Amino acid sequence: MSSRSSVSALDRLRALHGETDRRFTSAVAGLPVGCGSGCFACCQDGLTVWEVEAAAIEAHVRELALQVSPSEGAGCAFLDRDGRCQVYDARPYVCRSQGAVLRWSQSAGDGAADPTSIGEARATCDQHLQGVSLDTLPLAQTFALGPAESALVTLATEHHAEQGRRGLPERVALRTLAEGLAQLRATPDTGPTG
Ligand code: SF4
Ligand code: SF4
Image (cartoon, rainbow, N blue to C red; front, side, top):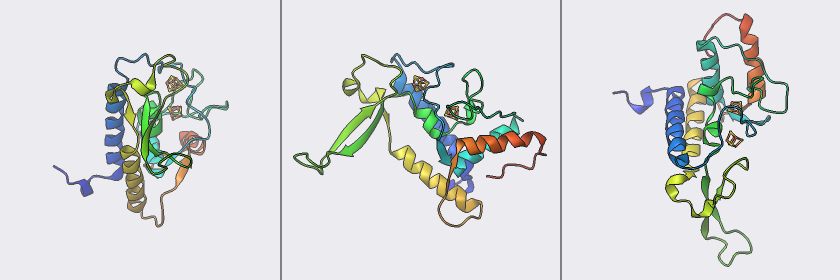
């Protein structure tokens, strides 16, 4: 069995994505979640991802010889004309958790009797779950934020180092990525560059 350090950050990212999908499926079980083909209000333009997630998308596009056509509308550049994600199987972490009831810790903040006390916040997409009381849902029907985001930052940093780059990893705009991948059609397969 491979040690952790022998597995590339890209492969560990894929494992994180798989675990995220399992957590999402478990969290929405039994809830009238509206996510599905044709619903894409959450696929907004302007999203950015870590370099390692951009590399995963590029590798997916190259492997399947996909022909990416950046959308020109107000949504994410990876939406196709029917509102489907052109890189669904390699979509980034943030796209895999949308639609669940997200749960995270936050301090009470200024004005509270104890501003240092830690409370819990919950929210979900406003396109569905109307009438569902998010605050009373059992924990099993929520998706905790925090640990996976921390793991993602670690993977981004390690991938950056694996590529021989110094400094901190950078964020990549999905539109910039999609426009770059659209140029691959006439480019020989030289392997992922991310
Ligand atoms: S998160 Fe909301 S907008 Fe996105 S697919 Fe699910 S229901 Fe639709
Ligand atoms: S990458 Fe795919 S799932 Fe994510 S916002 Fe863009 S179109 Fe939506």
